[in-house]
Amino acid sequence: MTIGASAMHCLVLPGATVPSAATLELGLTSTRATIAGAPATFTITSRDAHGNPRGMGGDAWRVELRRVGVPADIVPARVRDNGDGTYSVVAMPKRKGTYTVVVSGSDGREVRSPAVELKVAAAPVAGSSSRALGNILDGLTDLVAGGGCFLF
View 1 (cartoon, rainbow, N blue to C red):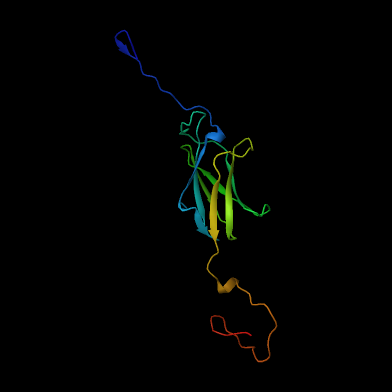
View 2: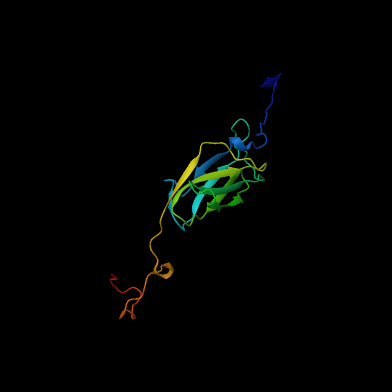
């Protein structure tokens, strides 16, 4: 804008954070899938009522994964303020299934953006955490981890 012979510049800053305007982007799990026990990463970008990125930190976000069909299975996530209006989120689901990513703002209300679902596949079998159940049959007392055997 020009007034007389002088130019005037105006700096427009974003408004206050509006939780419902925030965006949630999938990070390393861009395929919306991960393995049980592996970290799932997300990024929250704080925005004002007009969709402008805030560009500064200080917001309080709470994020959790809720397993679909199992309301009591909730996985809390860690949220780190990057100081620039973005927040790094890491969650580590330990059970396979489909999870809904739930984001709540500082007022405790859930952000009502389109639901983001994360598919969690079973982790590879680990002998150290596996169990064999059943009766011990006569003569089978020398089983060795990693060795092949058949139980009938």
